[in-house]
Picture 1 (cartoon, one colour):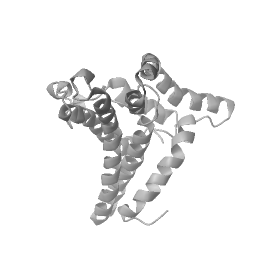
Picture 2 (cartoon, rainbow, N blue to C red):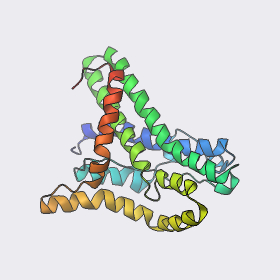
Picture 3 (tube, rainbow, N blue to C red):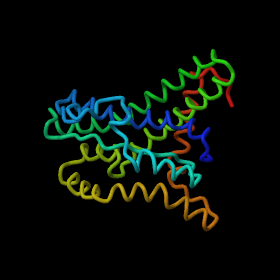
Picture 4 (spheres, rainbow, N blue to C red):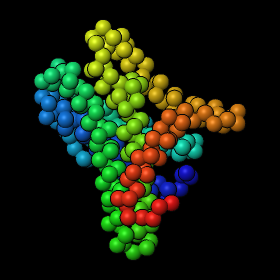
Length: 228
């Protein structure tokens, strides 16, 4: 990927939509399960400006594009959730955490279906629209699977936290203070080091690549496009 205006136009909408609806889904499910903190702060919203984090939504994806990473990732401001307000804190916290990845899977599904509708567009509009939608499918599948990894503070770690027995959960929770550094380091550092020494060290790509490709293959018939 190169950082030119056309490339930016192919990624801005997919990135904003994926990250915004991911966070809004957390807030919506928390609200429905008894905690209205996010709702009162206006975070149950499809307005991206309520969710944008300068580093996670703008700088980090840009750095990944510049570093020619095979993995594009970003995040928004975390939605505030007061677990003690949930009707069943342990169970409901798992549902709130899972809501973000589920939203991304639904966006990927909708994007695949919309590609079939885009076939009716004129050629130039079709090319731009389909590339946006194709980026949306790949990005949302990747974000869904990535966020389900049990690495704090990703959503998968909060699902694991709710499922573990209390003594193990308390020990596991100690990792959350280092989580963001671990995640960003795992995404950025290995590919950069690998290029300096002439090796492929894209660990996230190794983990997620085959699964994303498999899900893309399952969704492809919905697009109405010929198989590649």
